Amino acid sequence: MIRPSTKLEVGLISSNILSIENLSSFPFIKIDGKSYEDFYYILVKFESYEILLDVDNVKPTKEFEQIIEKALNSMKPLKDLQRIFNEYGHLFPQRIILGRSLKIILPDSSSNNTFENVKSLDDLDVSYLLTQKGEIIEKDNLSQWFDNTRYNLEIIEFDNIIPLYKILKEEQIKIDDILDKFNDFQNSRIIMTGITDLKDLDNDEILYYKHINLETSLEDENYEVFGSIISKDNSKLDNIYVNFGLYDFNGFYAIIKKSEIANTDLKNCYISWMIVGRLSQLSVFSPNNRDFQVNYFKKLVELQSNQLNYRIETSFSLSEGYTIFAHAYHSSTNYEPNNIIELIKWSRNSIIFQITNLSQLNLNDDSLTETKNIISMDLNICILPTDYKYLKICNNREREYHLIGYILTKENLEISVEELV
Image (cartoon, rainbow, N blue to C red; front, side, top):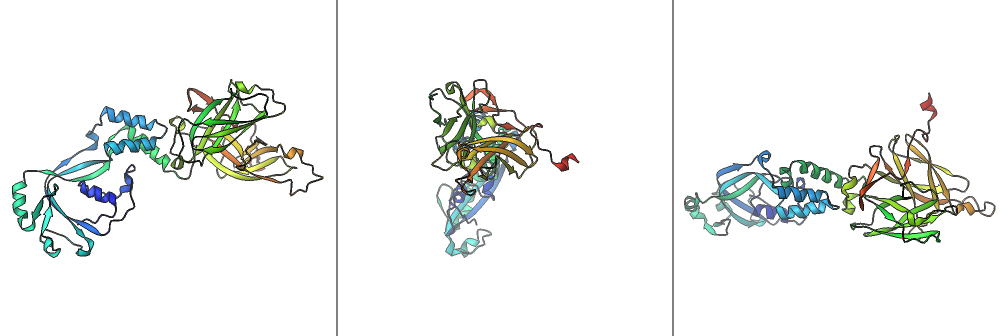
């Protein structure tokens, strides 16, 4: 007696899969929440033989391995894998039972919750059963039916089920790694990176809005962008400031502002950028930088006209070689990069930024109160560990570039009194 609770379980029973206890262990099967509590199955099985399949002796086809590898290297690996398993199947049985089987579906109102043998059919007021092909077999003819069909074997159950991708070797490890990363709902990852030229900008302007189109659309607007303006020789330009905003599924804007002393031809410059976010929300995950660990967080900073340096505490330890990116978050009506942010010092659990607000430089302390001189802003901070020196570019696969951020070095390390003792 089997009582299915979801539409998926009904489909599994109809396919002779009776013994899956934890459907969540099959990651590419979509589990529906629809309840099926008003009927149950009575199954009568006559088992004759079993076939055992050792997964270590099963070799997937070359074609299957190749399409799996292609999906793993795509920009949307989870969706592409889902599509493949929807086509090829999700399950692999390690035990196949041959024999004959009969069944009947009963409403839950006829509940006698025990069924031990054919004689129990009398207690349930069942007069017939159905074959797998839908043929009606009267209860009184069960023995005769079995004698006449005992050599016409059919598959009556698939047992000891594992996910189909477990028959793979190297690809299995990669799939598990992808699943672990997509199931991480707390931490952010590098979604994609890029370099965009500025050939279309006008050098006579001071403020520019450059739209950057994404080759692969995202599925959410909840992400952050970090980056810098760089020269042809891959060096960061300090007199040109950039911020990012107006995010949507297909791209974002880089808002670029030149300082008055900047004498740079922007047409020969580039924006290097990276998108950081949670995989479960965005679905996109470039294969180029998947091993990067990213620490991303926001801190509220209150800028004051008489203060330049601000200490930001971190919830984790910092080390030499880490790379820091920082951008100011502005309201949806103002993305202009008015804040010049520079890393001054760092310690094991904090970073000291020098933040100069360009609009604040014109404040007159005699005419404004100290309270009015305070400007609040969110500081978006992204920290990459020391394990990697280069990021691969998603829209330029021929090139790697040095991380354009602030590097934590011995020279800018702040040593406390306790560390000197």
